[in-house]
Length: 327
Ligand SMILES: [Zn+2]
Image (cartoon, rainbow, N blue to C red):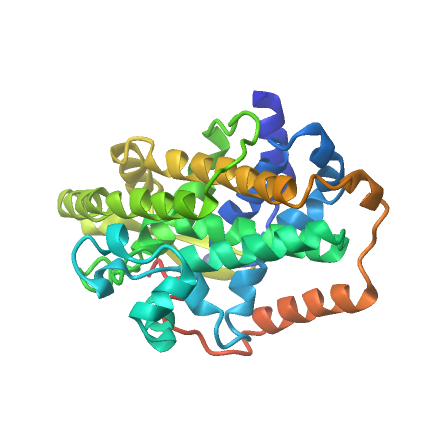
């Protein structure tokens, strides 16, 4: 298994897109989840593993173009008061009875959105729509992974309220880029989830509970570190960018005691479990029949355009944008 893991890492460690760090973990999570699928599913997913991997980041790219997209990636737990994650309505329709849609969208809707995409994926499997199955599988993997990131569950998402600006990119991008190749992604076979909606809320709660350590340890280390040693400069293509130094990143990663690995591995398992659960709920359709499917030119053009728009930074960044803010 170890060799496979190293191989997968090598396959996707090439710089897929310049200056994009946060994307690496999403791509690795979607890719690794494929290998937990049962025999009846793995053929189709493996055949399309490149799509599932590369498009793990579509939702982040869409944030620049689609008005409602940003809210789907996070939830600001504090906005709803103490222990809100234990009390918030688990289903969107119930949530709408307690809060206006605008409020929910303002503070983020990731756990509810996971459920919405799960239903859409189940429907796509039921009607054997290969294009939709792949697109929604990639999207679902993204949102589930986001729900497992501690800094996606707080209003202080980039340490901006505690003078720890850049911590989002440090935790989610820098650490995974440096250390994920050593993680053990062997999560076993996907299992059926009786109540996927409660699972995603549990994931958000677990992620949120990590936050004391995420912030506390960074603060402690910063106090101990010579300020000149906290950051360094690296070249990316023809740019020189400021990053958290290797020594600071390594010290932080060690002090977090396996937290990043745990959250990432948990995401891999959960993504596989959700895909599998959708397939079971769709009546276990024979996905092998779709194996010769190829994307239409329109679909490929659309993906290309999203990528171009994103690369050209045609759209202004919005709150909760992440990934390039180590400085
Ligand atoms: Zn995201």
